[in-house]
Amino acid sequence: MEPDARMSSDRGLAVRFAGECPGLALLLSLADSVAGIESLERMLLAYAVHRDGLDFERAHLLLYDELRDELVAWAGAAAAADAPPVAEAVARAGLSPSSAAPVPARQVKWPTQSLEGLAHLAWEAEPVAVHAPADATTAEGALLLRSAERRHGLIVGGWERGGLEDQRRQRLEDFHAIANHVLTAFERRQETRRAQACIEALAEMSRAAVSSLNVAEVLHLAAETVAREADVAGAAIWTAHGPESLKLKVTHGPEKLRERTARALQPLAVAAWSTLKPAWIEDPRAVPELPAERADELSHIATLPLVAYGRAFGALAIYGLRDGRPLDRRKFDAAARRYLMALADNLALALDQAERCAQLQRAAERERELRLRLQRFEQLAEFGVAALERERALRNPVASIMAFARRAHAGAGDQDPRREYFEIVLREAERLESMLKGVEPPAEPKAPSLERVQPNELIQQVLQKLGERLVRRRIRLLKKLSPEVPQLLLDGGRVREAVGNLLQHALDAVSLGGRLKVESKKLGGHVVIEIAHDGAREPGAALDQLFVPFAAPATPGRPSLAMVERIVREHGGEIRTRSEGEWSSVIAFTLPVRENQDRRRANGDRRHSRDRRLRFPESLSG
Image 1 (cartoon, rainbow, N blue to C red):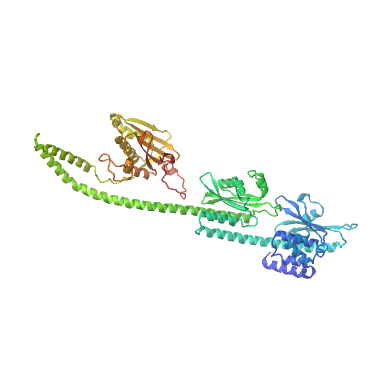
Image 2 (cartoon, rainbow, N blue to C red; image 1 turned 90 degrees about the vertical axis):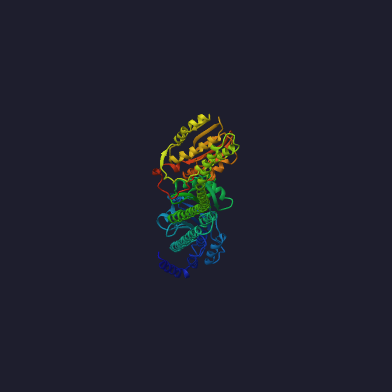
């Protein structure tokens, strides 16, 4: 019914009953202001047992349980000898449960298929039914309570005094029209309020997503927002921690109930999160995952995954408490589901945005670190250029010194006391010349050539080149190459160079007859290559050469360990040095497996990219 037509109908009914029955007129006037459905039901019963109303001696309200399709004896009332005027009695009933002289009603239930007599007639055929035998002083009446959307229940009563059947039927029909009209107005007002509350909740969540609130505050706000609904007693929110675990972050609801209810709902939340499908549970008693004592306390449950861009960030659960009242309607209709799913989507977007902000912050910090590092490298590069220019300027003087030293040494006799001095000058000049020959400008960087190679084969190739040196120095080699090491997509030449450089440094440090260990293994998502020796080592010596790009090489022409660190880092790994047991120095570096697989077989969705640099395993961070 359109709003204008409904207002016209309200005015027509008000004019009709204003003089005839002030009680019905009052019910009609309170249609848009009654506090709750319980108050409205008490007002209907008060009118039913009032002498100027339906004049029942005793009346009972049977509520319809839509979920189980049965009628439940919910409340009753009896006529009072000193009752106030009907309008006052109806108004008092809406304020106080005791003013309608309630009669305790047993929780008796009847399936609608088994109704008999007047109840069956009013439920299935005529909405108003009267049974008044001609030879009896009592009569019975029943009427159907319903709104425009659903059936609400039955009012059944009896008369013990004489009266006209037509007059009683007319009163029942008038009361039936007003009661159904009031129920329709009440439900529409409730739906309007619910829709407004949903809009306000979604708007509040949207504002929170772009505000300065942190993640914990947004989660608490979401739980409080969803629990504002009349049918919701509490809510719980879980967030994902790792690929297979959920952690409870927020609970909201009754103080003594919210924690244990959230723990009981954990399996349902995990199921919704893992399957990315919401669950709408109208009857918790039918869910085997819930403990029986928890299922008896809850009236309805909804669990929804928090999904944004195909990724599950957690789960949201809401629940209502069972108060014994029959379920007059299904809690999760189409509108309720759309609202809860929209709220879950907003919460997932807020979590996604928070994670992306954290990633941006980490990226900004990493950028600052790289800028500082770049500045340091630029300073070192300028120093290197100046050193190279001086080296070139020193070559001619050193060559002249050597030439004159040789001539002077050759001209000195064996008994000449200066011959020893000439030999010292000549030896030092030759050493200086050899050092200058080792200082060469860096070669132009080569374009990386990626290919699928076996790291164990690279190690074997380097050991084969160093085999003669190992034999000559009688060095014992302990080689442990794991067969589980897979092929990786690498620049084979540069990785081979890095392994060779580490082995040469190890050989320089090992004394005659010492020991050397080369080991490769696969740990989780990365390959670890270790090179260890038992030679003497000063504390921090390897670290000095590892992190100082222009550190002096051990022998002329060989690069420092800084080049090894750069090669490993460019391949997405890390390098560490430590001492362990009988090994005085252990240098290990990692090569990631996943990031080094063939890109042609990688996942095409690159939105969830992460830092390609694989962190060093904690078990090897000695």
